[in-house]
Amino acid sequence: MRKALLAILIVAFLFGVGLSRIPADPNVDDNRVAIKGYDPVSYHEGVPQKGVKSLTVTHDGAVYHFHDQENRDAFSQGPEKYAPAYGGWCAWAMLEGDKVPIHPERYKVIEGKLYLFYDQFFINTLEKWNRLAEKETEARLVEKADENWKKLNAM
Image (tube, rainbow, N blue to C red; front, side, top):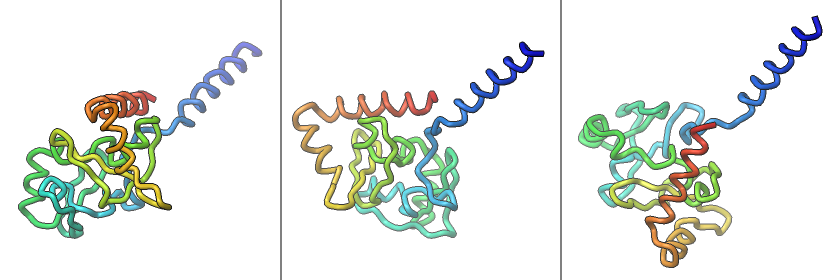
């Protein structure tokens, strides 16, 4: 009886530990909308624009809104090209392995990939990213953030 109870407690503990980890899910609102409703394709065009609710695509658990049908079609044909890095979480915070919400107008497209950044309370992490990239190279920053994103996804 004691062995069975001990086994149940061990399984329950291990199961509970697994549940306590934060999954590396996308940065979405209560309606699963990503990038605060901004059109992910528009970033690649150089001017982030708000999407409309009638033009949506769901990808990797996130709902994306689009400014026009053309952008919606482009995303549908290649979502991995347009979806933001790190599930839409702040790229700067990902350097530390943290998931931090973003400001939808603080962004950078690097090697064709969209990276979003936090900007609030006088902290513009895009500016911090750019300063550090001058010292370490942007490729190194992306590599480090990618490693941390993979660790979060492995949990």
